[in-house]
Image 1 (cartoon, rainbow, N blue to C red):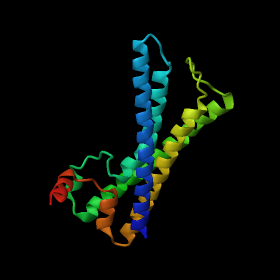
Image 2 (cartoon, rainbow, N blue to C red):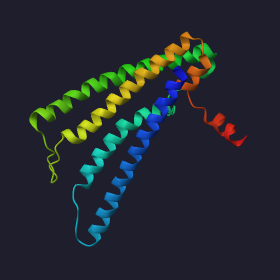
Image 3 (cartoon, one colour):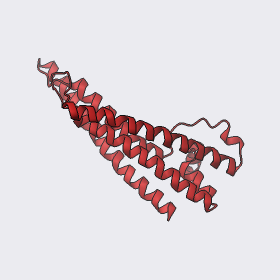
Length: 186
């Protein structure tokens, strides 16, 4: 059951990553159109503002995908020297630290959005974007990432209690690119 939940979370995050990728492609199209229009003496305006919002939102929402694909960077010098129990312990320690950090960030992001909502804040730019729009998307990404970290940590602890250390390493360990390449070439 736990492994099935891991699989479901991977599928959800791949869907989110696809949506984020489409958003980035739309942003690229907007920038290219802006460049083309400038060649003819015109402009859409707000390119740097919009691309900044898109990057903040894409980063916040993309972190859950990176978590599920084992793409977060970890220093593995010490980890590789341990047997399975030691590696799982260090992986769980890393997940607990990341979960705590991301939950704090998500809680601290709310006042930013709340202030914009209360003050009806707008960007001090030509577009005068209501700041609650990009900040809501950004905040949602942080909350999603916090939920993902906590869920993955909890699922990993359940797997440890069930004695499935190999599954824990596959779920929260480090992706070994050499093993990945060898597995694909066979």
